[in-house]
Length: 378
Image (cartoon, rainbow, N blue to C red; front, side):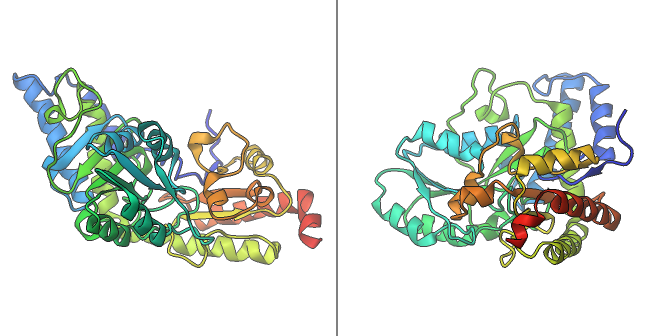
């Protein structure tokens, strides 16, 4: 039985699926129809997919015809890196592993752009890398970091990329649905999205193009998604993605108000532990995200201690949550391993309350006084 008193503070890992989405997914799953079939059931399934395509496109100001549904955000990132004829890849060093790993597979000479100590991608290094690049090039810079919440200068990076004739991709998986995103304002050519970060089903994502482009499909055999991604469409999952996108777009203002709770949390921790460090505190961040240290206490100890108290937080990216290792994001920001190993991430969502913050601070204080206060006093 689920703990009714549990406090969930790990929305960046996955957001609880919305009740409206559960209802719609259940409704669609109770029907039958392959979206590629021409009979009535197939046409009804196709209508569900196309409605979701419009809803997902609307979330970022795109055209529905340019939405390619995928099996998740990781697949969308892989398709962006490998599906548009790029011979040379330039990516920021603070990207998610869904960008870093396929980049090095596709281009062992891929350039990893350094970040500043504050966590922003180095645009001068991007300019230099593009000047040295030969052949078709793709640049990938994320919209907002999944660990720190820091918002990157994507529009500026896109301007630089386009001046050098490169394509520009943005992994907006953590940012879309949390802050306003417009594909034209960002100036990017490609955007990756994921349903489960905004209260939709897991295992559904999308790669969205600003304008129609030829795509070298990475999954072939059925010709779905206009030949851009084969495989029978997950109609229920796609419909749920569309509904989650619709709801997220309507609630951006309310989501932005989470910054008040986040800032309150950070102020209270600073009063308890003078040496606590909040990464990216001086920069624009996602309103729900805070990454900070507990001086003298390892992150894995913190995560387990919070879990025993019914509070869910994470150390870095949930995709690497079995690995006890320093964050590559913090390493790219020049944070030494000892300090990085004391950092955890709190990510808030629509169901969190001020009472959740009170409880977190109380438990954090207990852990710190039990395990780390001597280190802070040293």
